[in-house]
Image (tube, rainbow, N blue to C red; front, side, top):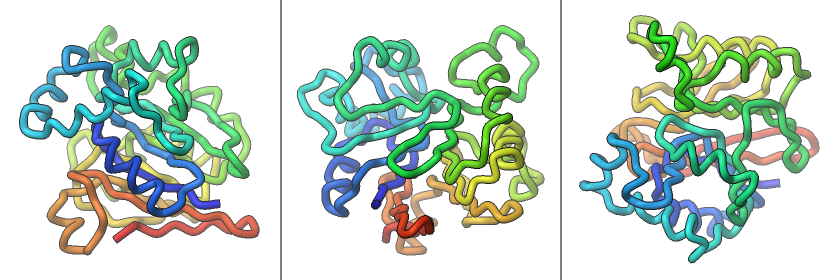
Length: 244
């Protein structure tokens, strides 16, 4: 089994389409900020600002309108830059090969996959906290009582010593899931901070976004801030490596 892991691609899905075919991926796991929007008018304020300098974010529109079809199953969690009304409609109006992973535990191919969407809200506004770009506490509680998973896909990072001194970085929810579900591997996005892979206990944690210059210096394949890698499962052993 060969799975392509993708960072925050913000609508630049043509690159992901080609890459999945090039490496012979059985599926793609994407960790949020897929950039799933219908059209320019549905972009949020931040996405519109970036769109002006990078129109390739519009590639996603052809897949949403079904002019194009993604070549393999693409499983993704919600980020903080997606059309949440579109996400909520996917169950009744599915897009070919696009599968939103609700926060929970899923069986995908031969893997138990934990999923957690959104980012942690550090503020105190009770109404703002309810926005779907933020992880809701009631979506976390049922996952905590679950059994061990093979991997955890999260848009936000775990809140741990790696981010000490950084203001409002990482999610206590993600840390809680790592402690309770004991995943072998964790993949997250959202941040452009330069953070190499690290361990939390026996769990290997892989950031899937970085500063582009850092990726280039290390010879890593990237599309803007998004990094890419291959997850393989052979005889119940999981291995992961970044693409370069």
